[in-house]
Amino acid sequence: MWRRLGVLDLIRIGLLILGVVFVATGLLPWEDALASLDEIGPLLIFLVAIIVLAELTKEAQVFDAIAARMAVLGRGNYAALFFLCTAFASFITIFLNLDTTAVLLTPVMLALAPRARIAALPLAMTTIWLANTASLLLPVSNLTNLLGMEKIGLDAQEFAARMWAPQLASIAVTMVFLWVFYWRRGERRDLRYTPPLLEPVADRVLFGAASAGCLLFIAMLLLKAHVAIAATAAAAIVVVAFLVRARDRLTWSLVPWQLVIFVTGLFLVVPTLSRHGLSDLMTWMVGTEGDPYRTAAVGAGLSNTINNLPAYKAVETVIPAADQGRLLALLAGTNVAPVITPWASLATLLWFESCRRHEVKVPMRRFLLTGTGLAVVGLLATVWTLVRFS
Image 1 (tube, one colour):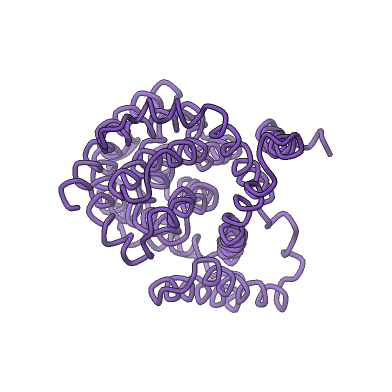
Image 2 (cartoon, helix red, strand yellow):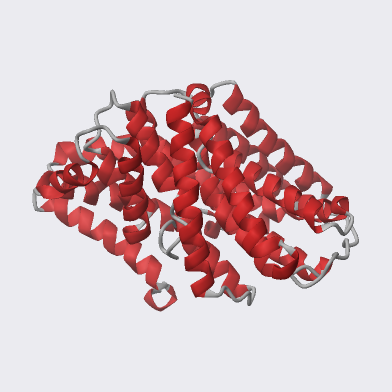
């Protein structure tokens, strides 16, 4: 079993073991550990349900059908395809979580590339950049949003009302960077592309059930249902359909155990470190002046150094709950800016693995330089918009 585990899996397991050791040795009091785990219970239920929903939706060919129809609708025009792809990736990120875009939409788009004779790299960069920068609008869009919802004290509609303008700003900047560095004529192969032939879905019942499950999830969010309840109800519909039509495709590999282990370990390790000096360091870094730009910059820097989830959790502990502006600025830093290093977000790590499996070369120097530009410009525009419209 250990031979089948990758380096990332071992890191996640090691984080959980470290957290258990902290509890066992008393570095993290038992009561604090229970409170921390109680906080993430609903979050883990949501995480499992939304990943199962997304995985089965991909298996039902919903994403494939939409991607192929987008290419047909573009009629060979790259500009039209660009707007359709950015809209699709943004929609999936906003409503079905950034990991869905990075893990499930990426292979769909890469599979579309040879069918339409499209260069794969522009499609791949669209999915990973928008998986991060389009994850500000709703609590479900990013795990960091869910981590901060209780302290921020906003429901989904109130959160969206505060973040719609910053979200538009981050997406707009991302689209400019995508077009200039990956999509324009000089960065792709041809003047036009060949629209692919549409293929029928293998099972219309599964296709319909998966589509209905996704629509139900979105509808329940709009009706202010708890995200864990909404995701579980939607996933249940699709699971039942697969039980009836394709039971052999329901495997334990659908359960994102790696993320569950990582998040659980994170919620044991970060509180322990915060009790033993980390909070003092974070207070020194973000300052006491209440500057949202500085807070966002610290979140961005830590995200690209250690990963955005521990970065958010570490900084959040030193920001008062009453300071909503800085908490939202921190989310901007940990959501929009993790586009520089490959380990800045879990989505980026998973995206690189998907590109490797599909034999898509990602020029690392170009990835780092363009990502740095997007992180700086995108974060400045996002935080300015957040302050301006608050």
